[in-house]
Length: 106
Image (cartoon, rainbow, N blue to C red):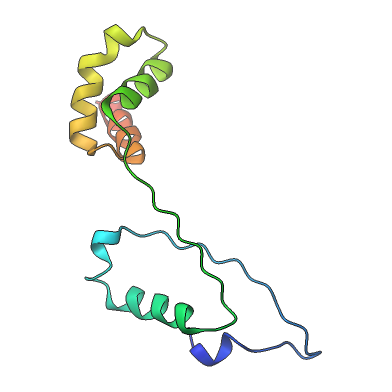
């Protein structure tokens, strides 16, 4: 991404609109100089509006509810599985789902 393109108008002088979605782990931002440079470029551009949405992991209770709903079993029957999945996934719902898929395949 070239920073001089962030403020370009199209041929007729009208502004072009773009939506860019970027997903990354905040603890990995320092290790990725390319991503850091790209984000810094966007933040420095006056015509770019940035909205950050920070997502947190889910708690054990929510993990249990997700597994209970998926397996169509009562919460009390999925609690021990949910505890193990929550520990393995650190509360990340995407990792929890992936872990459950891997368990189902075995």
